[in-house]
Amino acid sequence: MAWFFLYRLNGWLFSQEITSHFASWIFLPQIVRLIAVLICGWRGAIGLFVGALLTGDYSSDSAILHSIVLAFLSSIGAYIAVYFFLWWARLPDTLSGLKGRHLWQLALLGAIFNSIPTNTYLFFSGLITNWWMGVLPMLSGDWFGSAIMLYIMRLTQKLWSRYSIGNLN
Image 1 (cartoon, rainbow, N blue to C red):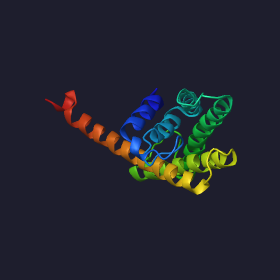
Image 2: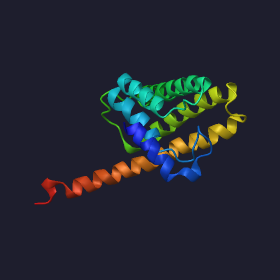
Image 3: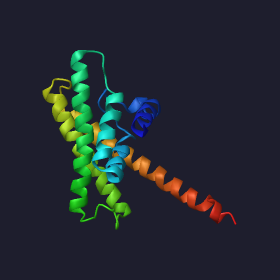
């Protein structure tokens, strides 16, 4: 549900930054991919797959196939990025020791593991004509969207800590 909501919100807020049906210079839902897999593991990846299916294009038979493949790439890319990151950063599945810099690194890995396979598929299936012009906005949009959401989550956490019931006394 978070994926679906942020996908729709992103289209409404950043309609001018959308370069195609497949890429945007700012893509807020990217953070949901990473958080879902961090928290829920493979179950999160399945939820992402379902969420991406809900936002797919079903206007033709070929569009249905593309939507299924893109939903798979979206979810499996996040799954691989998270587990590669945990291995690379030598963090346990419990995420103990996770720092702010780790989130930036994970956001970059998530953007890479999403944009490169997705645009490779789009290019070879003929849905885009220029691989690089698809990768660039998707890579930066995923990373920038993650950054915006990380700052919003950090601000929310600070406000929650400041104004929570225990701190009002």
